[in-house]
Length: 252
Ligand code: BTN
Image (cartoon, rainbow, N blue to C red; front, side, top):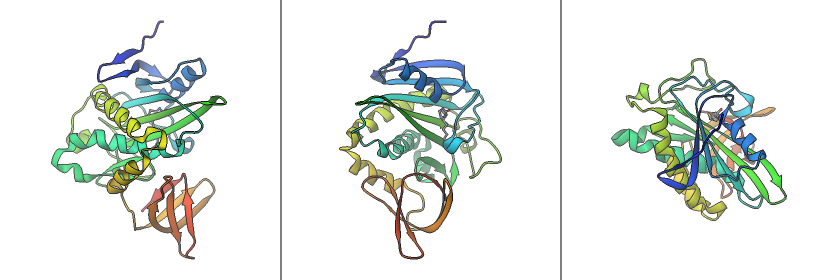
């Protein structure tokens, strides 16, 4: 079957491959990158059969929600470590107009979950593969709960319909794509990260509060003091030591 990626009217420099069922839009974008796809490509699917979440978790992916992965071709010299925060800010910016005067209910939970009144409405999974010495394929996978959300999750979860917002996944994609393009252009491979960090911090949940941070093989407790200029979370432990953390699950 021939699959055609169509130009995106609002973002002419990017294309969109809209799929029905797929294992994972992130997996598909990675396969395309390895097969020579140059990037600037969004892959969306109606349903994912093996949706991937952070830290190897499964992402429930029945029809009705948005499953979208953006493939970018970057350089290993770019400030890739900023991207979780860049992507979160883009999703936050895309959701804000939908909430209108209730936009204050939206916040960002480090590193890249968007919360509505404290409940998670989206997930972002970044993956990358080095294609050559100076070419890195990066996939930004975004799941936005438009119509439903899973039960029994690690963290309280919600969806846009439960918040009184009716939006079709492809209409949500139509809002996300241009805002993601603007935010990535603002990031400018790291040169514009200072302004992104400021906006991210303005929208952040829980800066200054006591948190638990679950790492791959450790659990830390401390005060979430700041996000440093490189995008790391600064955690002040009870001992007074300041830890800079790049990835983990945050609990308030
Ligand atoms: C998380 O655990 O919070 C991240 C979830 C990311 C889910 C999205 S849905 C589109 C893309 N494809 C995947 O397999 N995962 C991401």
